[in-house]
Image (cartoon, rainbow, N blue to C red; front, side, top):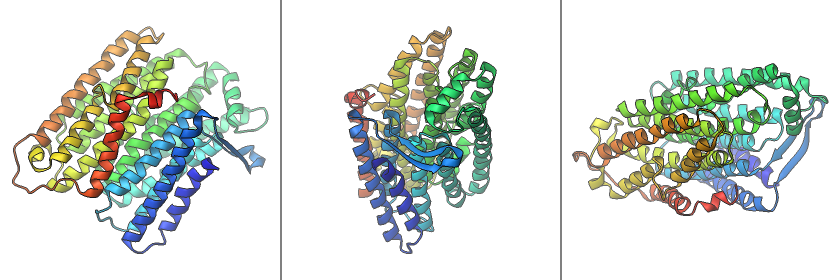
Length: 470
């Protein structure tokens, strides 16, 4: 029942949001729905030590597809992240005006329902259904709200994701045809994928990986990312970077890596090289950015690259590091985007050269920016350190013949990350005092940011809260 509620609550509250006409009413309704989802997600995650929750209902019996859900540790951790992010975003946006709020909040909640389904689906056709359901509202969110180039950006986002979805659909149909009993059941798909010839596994691996790689994104499938993050409203940017990125990583870990276990090891080597290029390329681009949103966008590309390398390192520590970092990165990047949005609204610019003096005018916001930045660059005693340490340890332990080289070059990303992130903090917080009167964080902004800071510090000091479950 809890798994069903994780889908139904945001779906029902999202559909009902379209009927509201007054802004305060729809904001309150959306927040209540998001908080109710958070309670259910927390209960589900806390119960994982007892048993793995499952739900299975007849859906399309003639096609061998069931409405099958399973709450694995990784799935429930991602649903918990999703359930945490949405109310934080709604609270942070409480005192900000949004055009057509009923439509905006309705689409946001529908996107949340789709994300929950992606993480919980234990049937391949159901997974594909929710994969598309999550993308559709985000496409409309990106196209209707944001910067002046949002239409062009949303179209580019649609073309990329639609191409990936078609490739995944082709692989899905082929896998289904090869099953002995015509079923999309997860265990049946696992057995069928493992029994296919090596060449067929390799082809299907590529089809699925392109779909997941676009969503993560991985170099060179990343070109939609920076413009999308720049042009969309901050709540939509957070959904894209904190949550939809995890769809791709989750898909690789559940539906790619286990289903095609006998592909040529060279595939893994190539992917790790592409991920490494993404780390260095994203970091170098971030260093030269003058737009603060594009800087954060390229930093996210570098962070995701390290997680991709961890997946294909094929070690227990790396796998635990990926799952831990998926959660921690989602929390940190949400906080970073919220602070960036506060800065942009107060200075009316994203140009680093035009920013400065935040520490004197808004000390609380500055402290939040510094702590979140420390988490982003994986400083010890922050949540970012734990996952990245496990990732580097796992890459070091890998049987890949180039594991030492990979680890050393990926480590450059940490150094470069400290350069561009601390440089950003210096220019924004400690640069020349501007003549503008800058207000510090409002009450609703403090609530969201303080919760994020608490998670960053608690999981940094006592990471066993997550690790013992893994």
